[in-house]
Image (tube, rainbow, N blue to C red; front, side):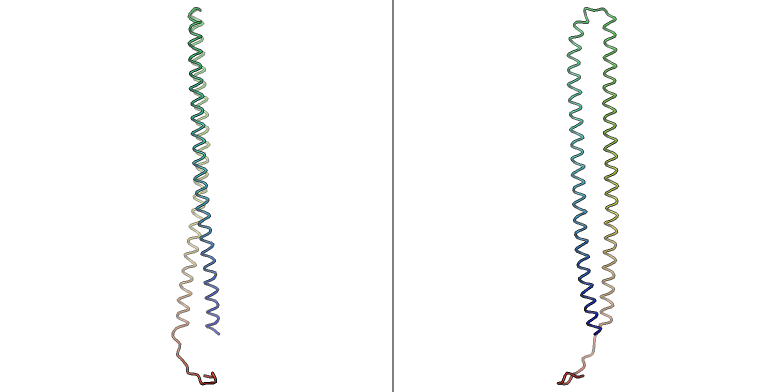
Length: 172
């Protein structure tokens, strides 16, 4: 009866251990998939950011080319005007350039700050997921130890048993 109970307990324990291992395996797979998705999201965000920066630079360069052309035309007309008007134009043009540079720099800082915050958030999520994974690994290790202790106790309790002869009627 005891060996039957032990056998049933052992079978139950083995089944539960197998279920636990399968659950841990599924959890590990899901964590890996989530990490891959996060990496892909980060890569896509980086590409969008770089594309945005390239578009902004292209617009700025086009604006600069346009302004240069307008300035050449204007300079040709301005040459005929008084010197004072020419100086006022140059000062206004310089102010606009500084404002455009400041605006671009502010937008760049805002994008960098936003990306830094997103990266920090991702890093915090990775850290939390790593902690959860480590806790699951420790739990798994603890359960394996318990299994080994249980098996050791089983082998001590089961130990070698003497063979008792039985008669033909099945009695001992």
